[in-house]
Length: 183
Length: 125
Image 1 (cartoon, rainbow over the protein chains, first blue to last red):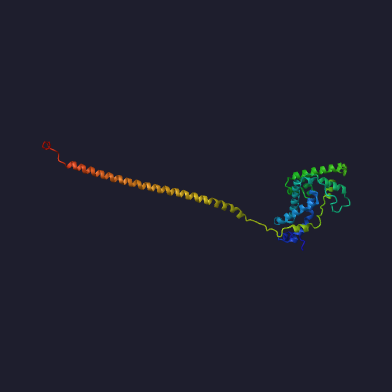
Image 2: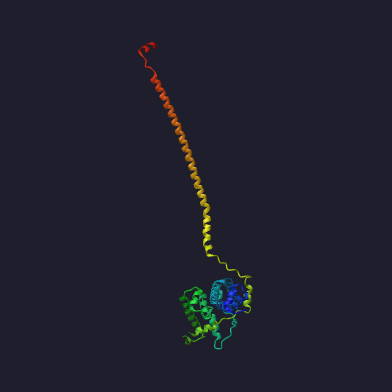
């Protein structure tokens, strides 16, 4: 099977199931992680990611390029997660499932700080949480986040600034970082 | 860039979905991808117009028929009145002619009678 990504999109559009599966494998980590960081539950994140890919399957003809595909998946995943949180508000306060992280740790990272940051992120409002996930997990710029979430650029900037301030304050309060570490 | 931002990037590294996720997605797909349904723009634009025209055509035809029927009825009634008027006029003219004829006859009869003399009066008495 060819692994040329642009041809994958064309073949998937033509009904090639193996090409579509390759696209799923290319983007599954990103889509699942958006759901996981937003919903804080692996089972809900998997359901959400599956829903996103089913929607993609139905809308393949509207995808113009691989860049568009990535943007489209992030946008749909983030908005589905926000809707899901608004429908089931109790989930927003649930902590991340213990021991669920499977990513390899870097030697210089602080596992306790990372876990607490993820927990604090889960306490943010859905829209602010989506902004932070797209910014710091997906590395999206402010303009793309604004387009993905249908909000003004200044609102995105405001969410980032306020969320960072809140996270810093909580991290200092929990003595995870010291005030000297702040810029 | 602040340390918190760096720590966030580390904390939010993408995670892999559970094993077998892609296979489960593929099993959940419908058997055949639905074809894209693209409706030509000209059809979209003209279809409502045809429908509206057809919707108006029947009442318009009924109204036109009603107007024509009323006008025909009025015309027939007018012609009937006109014919009756002409007949009455002819009868009147005929009556006037007859009357005039009778008057003429009477006048001539009066004129042709000789005047009575003294002797006639005495003979009668």
